[in-house]
Image (cartoon, rainbow, N blue to C red; front, side, top):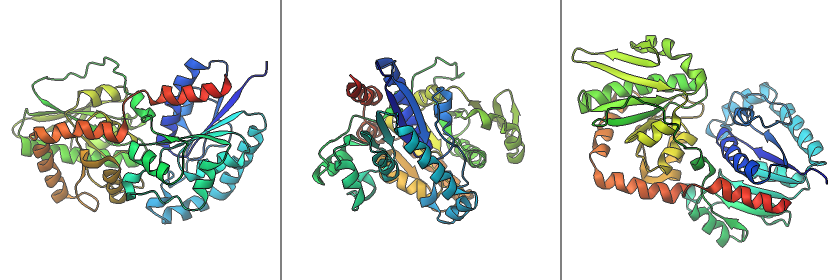
Length: 396
């Protein structure tokens, strides 16, 4: 019997993460199917962590895939060989497709078009498009043809509103089953050294260096403002960082006037010491135990919202987490997320953000609304298994 092959396409870090959750579920259901991946953007670290073979060249571009946020980044990508790299990736996908049976494409029109170009059957998870952005998705001329093509077996939407919108626009095979990244939040039992009587604030600086380091510096400044507004011994702070950022913590501490020792950042005031404890392996635990999140990230903020957490964000330098990105994020994720300021956060912005945090933590009605909003925007856990079941059915 011929071995079956499935290729997962994605165009972005968040999309890689979605696909990896689907892959985990699919492996349990269909262990005899060969799985390969091609991240159209970036180097696919999420796939590498799962030991999923990546079929083509991987290069980190200056834009990190965020070309729509700053067109100038396109020129940097072009100088680094974007056209040649894209052509190489396309050729690799087309060659691989000759011995492949099914494509799972997660992202936007780009991966849907690539899946279509292979002449194979394909499933699309339209994770980058939402009707919450504009009220109605502008499908254009090409996307309906890609999604209504007979070889497109199924379309998964990122929320119920989008599924309804696409349905009204003539995409009948669309369904919302939830967001796969919500299946990635399993508690590890890590001891976070929490004091139950204090508010817990999670810090999410993002995952891409050097931007995540700059973000963390800003968030540490915000922590000091929060303590000034809330008072000492009211809040405790836990940062969820990627391993590579842990290596930068000492330098960040020095630049911000903090001290760093054994995963703990400390700032000494006349009254007390402010502590931020950092973990590279306790993301789900920190999120689940938090009362509120301060962050400058993409997928991680979505996961926080899905868990019903209120989120305060401040614009950074970018390239990914800028005001433009943060503002779009608030449209996508609704009232759970509040972005403070329209430019790179300054002293005034940080002061305002600290005040908003105090207000949010004291507003029980708002905190309850965040739980309902999270379910509406991100769905219940279990999406990975539902999508994996659909893919496995094709092979049965």
